[in-house]
Length: 172
Image: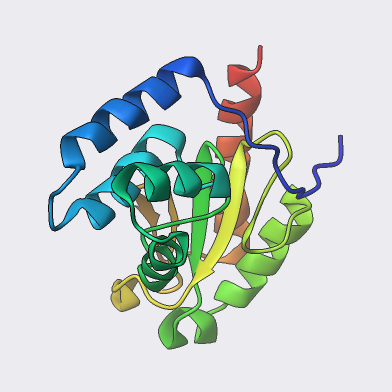
C-alpha cells in the first residue's frame, strides 16, 4: 500500500469546537490571550487550521493577519496535521557529516513521503530539523519524544520498522 502526502480536509468534532469556545471565553480581555489561544487551539486540534484561526480572530477580536504572523513566527505552531508518530531527523552539521542524510533519504523512500509531510493514514510525519542538541550522539533522530542516537542507516531502518509494526498492530 503506497502512502502519499496530501492536503487534509479540516474535520472538527462538536466537543472540539465547544472546548475551544469555552477556553477562548476565558481568555477575552487578557493581554497574553493571543499566544495562549494559539497554544490551546493546537492542543485541542493538533494543529492550526485556518478555520480555527478564524474562530480565534473573531472571538478575541484580533486581526487574522496578526494571529497568522504570530503562529508563523514561533516554531511550536504547525498548520498541517501531524501523524501519530512524528519523526525528526537531525540535519545539523555533526549529524549530517555522520550520515543523517542517508537515514532521511531512506525514511522518505520507505514512508513514501518527503520531509515536512504526513502520510495519508496520519500515522507518520517526517521532518528534518537543524539541531536537537545531542551532537555527541550523532547522527540522531527523535520519534515523538524518544531520542535515538549513534545511528547508522541500518539501525535507523530498524527504528522505523519497529514503529511501522506498532502502527500496523494499532490498525488491527
